[in-house]
View (cartoon, rainbow, N blue to C red):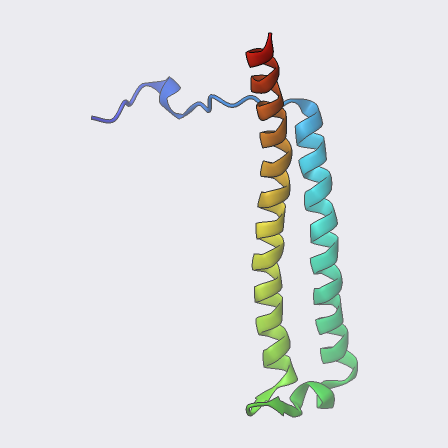
Length: 103
């Protein structure tokens, strides 16, 4: 049966300020990458609408292809962010367990 006590939703993991700062830095950098991709889409749509309307591959115009590309890019950047954050937090815990086992 589920535990409905107030402590049930508290995480057992504790993040220190350095982890939070590093993860924030990763997030802002990846957001900047996506922002430039989106800015490219907006600029193309604003200043060269005819180019966005031209049919390119398989009867799909550049606007639709770019839009799907933005969605895929967002998913890829989210996966990269998760991997970067997990890689850093996981490496420290394995170092601690290794050091603890050697002592």
